[in-house]
Amino acid sequence: MTAGRICTREVDLVDQNESVQVAAERMNSRNVGTLIVLDEESHPIGMLTDRDLALRVVGKGRDAIETTIADIMTRFPCSISEDTSIEAALTKMRSGGFRRLPVVDQEGKLLGVLTLDDILELLCEEFTEIGKLIQKESPASLAQL
Figure (cartoon, rainbow, N blue to C red):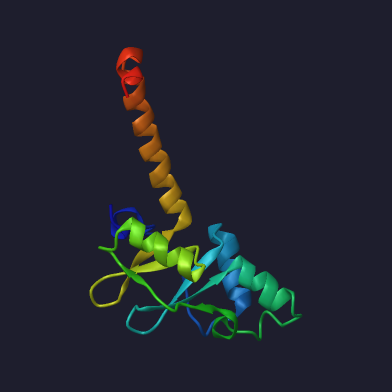
């Protein structure tokens, strides 16, 4: 299984020059906690989370209208290709302390975002399938294992 197959393709975007007030309103209206920032060529350069708003704006008493996304966004130190295995993506997430990674095409343009929730959903589906297979087995055949 690859990152490109399970990543979230519908991604909410924000321009780095917009105010955090605009970003907060967008998060509220779309009921999301993360907005992705792209450069002019559609390469992911950062993200803004509701946590960023709480800690870097409200927590520091900054003006939400005067503060821009670029001032507080988390910059992406890395991304993954759509062909990256889930195992490799998870390793990169764990080593970097990331909960989300942008998934890019061969030109580095954003295709989607792989989240820990995407991976957990895949694991739940796999465990459900394993459970169904086990239920089909007879107690005698399971005892032989």
